[in-house]
Image (tube, rainbow, N blue to C red):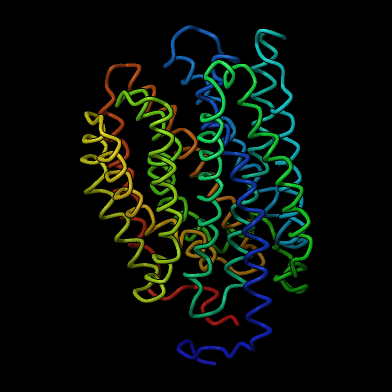
Length: 432
């Protein structure tokens, strides 16, 4: 079969593949809900674990713990990537969702600083490290699985559902906080209400576990038995350039993603002066539209090519980041904020809708999950996980606009590395 020919899928085969995508992505949604709910709920529990009397300082310490969770991602990406390439994608995804379930349940029952003193933030840190391992393995394995099971010719569209559910996890996390804000007082939210989302996440993880156990395996036995399967030696020996390229464009992609999603809620409260409830509503609406954009931008990439989409992302991100953040800085209108954030997220969608697929197309099956997961986790840990901490550090030092410049520079880097992408994908493009 030539590259231009399209495979014929029976109705039954299409149904099975779509169901597999739904099952895999449902677990992805739960994983990211559990991980993100920490950031959105931290407005209320930061003072319970890091009491100081200074809101920015409390947010800063909470963000530092969030960032440490990201630093565990490369280890998780390596461990679960190795499992996925040597034992199977399915087993890797089942283990990761079980770990996230345990971590959320542990946070839900964790005593505060007032009860056990300094042990409280230490235990919180350890739990987040455990969750960081889990989510570090989630991205690479899920991206690999969904890319392999997606229908050829529509891989951009189907693979975009990884970020539909990833963003859906964020959306449900912030929506859960919004709903609680309607029924609980701020005092109740700080005292005990913040624990509710973590209980919800643990229960949802058990449901996703059932769905993931129905998945069929996509990696072949001969690929799992390959002598370099799931090894870093196999990547650095034969696929070093691809590995470095993925790190290059993921650095900027992760940074701008977390800037306009998880950090933006705090930015609206701490810099724009919005009430926490108003900021939560703005972010709920923006995240919902962002989620809906993913399949559309995935379809666009199927038409114009993944490389072109990535270069558009880098170019528009370079041009638009500073002006958008600057306008948000002096803005107090929730409507203007919503419009500006939506524009920014449309730019980010050029990357997020196909990010996992672009990475998967750069590695052969025997090192695909490890190559995708480990390279993504490194860049995501350094640049994505630190986004809030870096932004708040600039603000604390009185130079908040320095963060705008930092994000813009990283978008230039993303554009330059996107230019290194092959015009025709190295792998997957001829697979059934």
